[in-house]
Image (cartoon, rainbow, N blue to C red; front, side):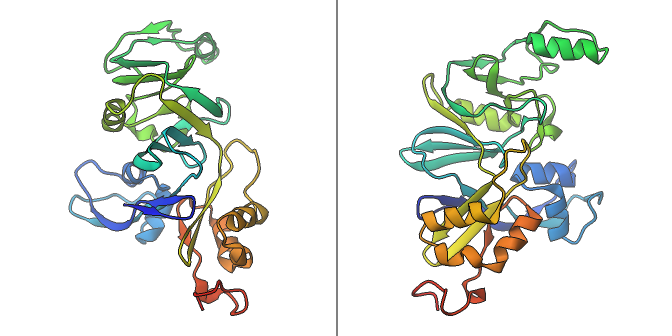
Length: 283
């Protein structure tokens, strides 16, 4: 579901999911782009709970789309989510893995330089050095196949940095890479068919997002994995003002969202605002 907002959109929905054979809380959470602890809490489960096929889980995977983009790929690193825009609309969105705190995914605007099916991996010198430090066998090149960490597709965007598949599906929706953006196999193969060389790519860092739909206001707060700051009430207030929802800057739900940092869109109920601060038409 994609819903229009003032300068943004909200994707995802509140739904139920039927557990399949092989599912774990972590895998289901990664598939929907939510934290395993959040999924467990929503379903009154322990984080190490075992799932049984046929069980149903409540899933709320609503996310706010970063604003200001009209065409190409956008990856919001704290959100660990990739968006594909065409003609000002979100066509597709996928959960991804991005760089660790030691191997940060770079921010900036790029363009797709290469598109490869079943790529070989020429191991960067920096990763070879890490292999040596850890006492591992140093690899210089990995042929296409099941042992290749690039998976079945490579979308090159900036030197050795790219968007690619994986041979480690449990790593999706984690800060787990050496700087690349990693996708589930079925997701990267689907995305690959929608791209061409020269398409724009933006890697951004927005740990807080807001959206407005009429009188309904949403806020989404993530952790600050690269310790760049900005996860503050002031940052949220500024964004609320930008979408014409400045009256919500004192909303108590903001403190709840900042404390939880659960990484999904939370509605700020208008009925909790004082009558003299509620937006016109919402009283």
